Image: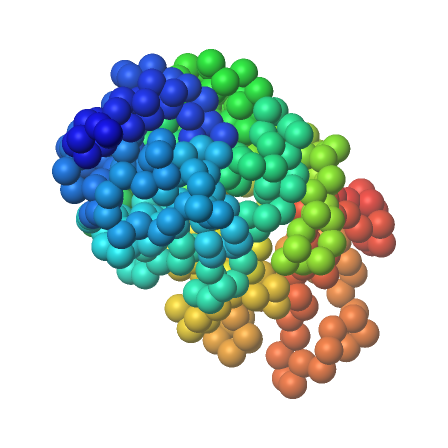
Length: 429
């Protein structure tokens, strides 16, 4: 019988040798040591395996079912497929990754805080969402990527299987970096950048399934020459994602090519949350994609009425989850959507639109929020509809021209065929 300390050393060495986890790729030691998990100063560290250095493989992998400590026993009394100390994935709120990414010291030796994109890129430090489990939980989020749907969609694609952890659809756990690195109390800066994502489609070639956004050809400025960075919170001189003066996306990951690996014009993705398939979208024709607006627009700074802007998906959406519908950020283009709204729903789209599109100066705005009467009815031949009796299309106004829910006409893939002025058929988003 081997001494206990020899069994422990053997287990750790076996883990290091085989280095397989969560459906991810084997990677060189340099890549892993540069990752947020493998960093020897602030990497993965489990309280029940305190004898290991930070970043040691044994904090996640247990080749012989159990090494030491009080961690959960392997399912069925035998090691998991990826030699993990906990079940790889069970549900939206029960996942191996959440055992540490929950901002507690229940399992992790140090509480791990992962802030929202509105905080990290937007600089909105009042945001209270501070860990990944919270982002995927309902509440406080009311919309999030559904991990079960991700697992269903990726199974059989790009080398993923039904045993793969759905978090690995977007993250390579052996390469993922903090963004910003090892910082829970500050937003990104040009000197603290990291790159957390790996493209789903590149998982097909495990040997080259590296980070996305950290190299040449992987920036928003490579995707388009028409990107304009939005303001950071409360500023008119600094911009997302890192608070610098850069505005062309040369410092921003090309999230668009990343997202359209899945969200495109051909893939069918069922949404458990919406109880329907997600819309298929041709981004080349989207006004909030690569498609150009047909006519003049009236917008807020830093944008101008020049045609042809292309947005990043993250300009409006959180990547994990949000207290707002459809993963809409609570801070967009330098300001919050509306301080008086605790949760943004589909009836409140006007507050999102008003972060970039100029609303009318109207007494109605003080009681009903943004009003967009001018662009719809009064802007010369660019207007969509002739202005007649308000009650003919809108509900009773009670003395003010009533607003209409923006999503009646405006959503990804939407168009109208009843416009009064040319073009009478218009893409509306």
